[in-house]
Amino acid sequence: MHPITLFLQKNLFYLLLAVLALNLFQRRYQKASERKRLATLYLAMLVLAWMILVIVVVAFHWPDWLLIPFTLAVASVGVIFRRHTFPFRLRCARCGGSLDSKRILFYDSNACERCDPQQEPPPRL
Ligand SMILES: [Zn+2]
Image (cartoon, rainbow, N blue to C red):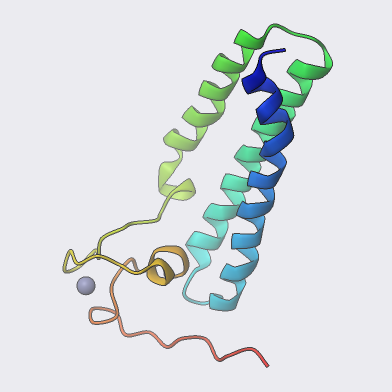
């Protein structure tokens, strides 16, 4: 097995956990981040599909080059449905200013505080 294949086999699980943890943090912003919460779920499904493909290639001792078309297939599904899988923007949709990480990850409006003054969720007790 190629070292890249083994690296993917060992570490894709942690990428999946990170995406799912982000999804759990987004639950705090229920009303403001419905689209982005769904997007992280779709991304988690794509990572899971990629993980399963890597595990199948390793388990059945298939040639490593098969991971290239499999990975491209998973990535192209993400690109084709990018309106649903990647709604994150780095710049404000209205004024073009840069957004902070909270606005990028948790607010569907993709607008800065000045353009879209939404309340923060109450602190958890
Ligand atoms: Zn703005």
